[in-house]
Image (cartoon, rainbow, N blue to C red; front, side, top):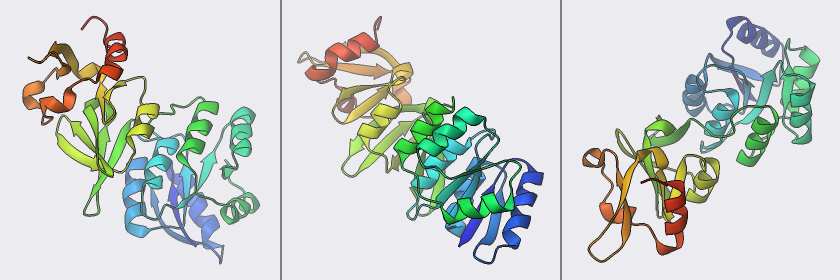
Length: 250
């Protein structure tokens, strides 16, 4: 079983590598010091298991796990953590694999043997119980094997496009595998559904206007830079009241 080690502290990575070198059933295949490198390395090395630190700058362990889940063959995940007993209860309740720091050999072996793939709902539950942000700070796009993380703060609109979702952002457009329904739930604080196939970032909306035939639509703050067709931003009657409530004052 191939294992990728992810921790922002070199001594922690060295310790895990040392323990893995003594395990016949598990093979150390690489290490990363941050979540972004971890996702890229996992796509290249295709590990069976990722030993993943939870508290890291940039992409924390929970968000990194979300992105690892989007890979064609997602690895199983074991979190390494120094959490208190309340967070550990959350891991236990959701059957999430973990080892406490400082990592002991017997605990690591047990966790590796029990490693399992984690559903997004499980990661969200653990993040909430552990007082960590449940929503990601990025969405992940892949094109011809190239990984691209798009900051949520730069996204104007998510639009359902057959089996994919198109992300319209400050630097262009990309396709992602996430469903619009899942995105609407995860980013409900910052995005509003304007019709069944589109979510718009509240911070990106400049105003609401009407077409010549009386339909309402949203105008983006930097409409001249956007690649979104205005007809894609028409608000359905079903969602108009909620959109006006969320965009009050516009």
